[in-house]
Length: 433
Ligand SMILES: [Zn+2]
Image (cartoon, rainbow, N blue to C red; front, side, top):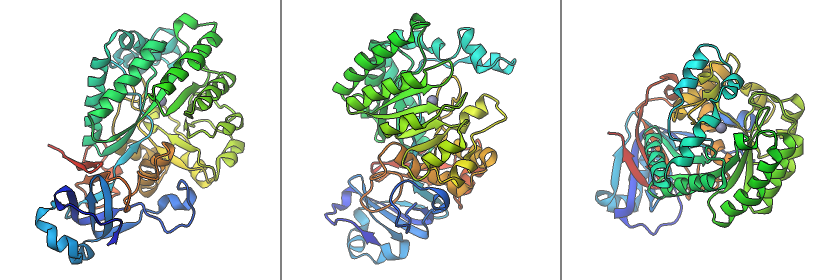
């Protein structure tokens, strides 16, 4: 076993042994940075593996045989908590790098209208869509919002997710956006996993500012961003840049304000229409998300960079679209690709990373191996936490998912079922009831 430091108190240790397939995501590739091209397939699988965790960190990873020969383990085995993972798969906990968990109610009217044939834009024009979630969030207390988010985080845990990016964006007033971010912070403090918060004040132009979006952009730039940054309520600022939402020029203004206040940037891009990406690259965005529409030119610009293309096929599925993002074109063009759920009440009400992976395989022609890497290590890159998340290596956080399957390919294969048996979040084990 390869080991990091050895100041082990056995009672704080957790050992996963006899792991049928240990999917480490370690790579021999010398290239640092997100997994691109052929490297996206490198899963670093160890058969009959073992992982030892201590104080929330992974301390050693290797074969079960080596672990049993380890002198420290032999001496302390009885005092160490142990999970027998025979005939199971262990992989890094999923990193869901794009979710919108701060809302109050499902959007069932939109759901039915869409079934009857209404488009995304028609639903928005009829008072549905993002705007229809605003009132409830504005009226709901921070505590009630936090309680809802905790429930969602627990559900995610049961499905193998250990790191979650959580956006505000259903308040769209200074007070309700800050309240949403506080609710995310409060929910995160009671969850053993890791939450990365994003201010999405620029989700859509609220009704009060229709026809004068510039005024709203100024509120985002001059009030929301400085206040969220000062109180350290968000690590990132996101913008929905598309027709019916914010223009490229407005997006640049918002990015400028975010960077000025020390926050990272990311954007919803290319969901409904194509936007040229090069004007945004100077802000070093962490990710462009959706990417259904993207030009060849932009694909070659994004190749070999660490700006992630985050694909969210759950939205395409739930909207009943025939087209999905062209993952093959992106991957084969050298663009790093991540997968996320886009959990939200309007277009992707799922917390299941396994479902996102299944859709990636069946509708976007990603291999199961590529889907695993996109849902773990590249998700970690998308949130700029790849130094501690996304792979099973000594020194990284003890974030693991144990699946009751013999082969990792079964995770996207058995779509609609949850085979996650246990999740380890920063060293805390949560077994599924
Ligand atoms: Zn989204």
